[in-house]
Length: 391
Ligand SMILES: Cc1cc2nc3c(=O)[nH]c(=O)nc-3n(C[C@H](O)[C@H](O)[C@H](O)COP(=O)(O)OP(=O)(O)OC[C@H]3O[C@@H](n4cnc5c(N)ncnc54)[C@H](O)[C@@H]3O)c2cc1C
Image (cartoon, rainbow, N blue to C red; front, side, top):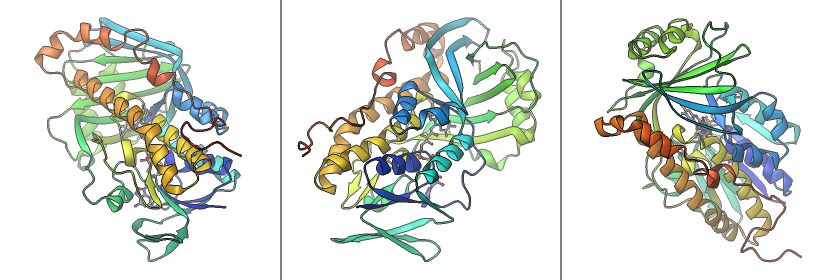
């Protein structure tokens, strides 16, 4: 029996722990925050591939129970003209991040995964017998392998390779809102409506009393958005959309400052050359963070956790398993990150892109263009290609 130290109780960590449990490997999750989910977190869209991956570890139902199936994403110009729409069956499931964290933790605990909070990883030592995590509070934990699921600003990534790339700013600052009172705005009939305004992008959902919205604000330089209070941000955000034909101003003005999620400057991650070192490996945003514009960061984190577990099941050594895992994941996440960056350029357009936005949108949502992303399925029980045949 192998015991795994997982650093990070976000999405990738608990999912990996449950996938490892399926292959007979125990895990303990160490999270730097003092309690489950930090209570903060906007709406994220789980793509069909992400939900299908969750199904392989029996998590589709509990996650569906806290999410909204979104029929389509409809894009509009700032003048209200519809540019394009893409749908699916459904297109994605919208879920509040803090609720997703909560469900993943509950499900993992039910399967015997232990969680320890207030444990910030600072260092790692390893030898032939195992790996030891060193935490800021002076405590340690030992195991056979250590999985860094510690997000885009991963400590584990820099412990593997001090020269590892740092997050790269996407040019967008992001905000979200979760109104607690029903808004008197036109229903979006099960779709998300996204408006490419003159100064920023506004997206919202309103159906059956459920409402959520977000803003992507272009800014050439990253700004410390949390240094400005929510009241002031609501004022600035609503001003961004005056003159556009969308419900943005109305929705933002009606928002309670307590409901504003200031996500701040948004980053992705350039290609990370090293994903593992000996008994230590990274998954999720720690290894391959994509811009939120791809709508795939959470789904990629889920897929990576599951594929790592399959590789540890099928390869005879840890090093072979980590190599197999990289082979399965690298090209796919590279394409997703590239897709996110391309989509970002439509949200912070230069004059030329703005002029041809309707054409760009039509190309972006061409039928079948993203089947490689959304139709990807993991057959958990199938042997990993390239692994030695099982007895
Ligand atoms: C504004 C915004 C919108 C997004 N929208 C979408 C979307 O629509 N669809 C989508 O799929 N994705 C979206 N994403 C991306 C998605 O949230 C991430 O890809 C996903 O959360 C990655 O999961 P993770 O587990 O790898 O990292 P995280 O969820 O970031 O979890 C990492 C965990 O590690 C912990 N940690 C960090 N350092 C340490 C340490 N040293 N010791 C112990 N614990 C540590 C952190 O506290 C955290 O709990 C969005 C992201 C942002 C910022």
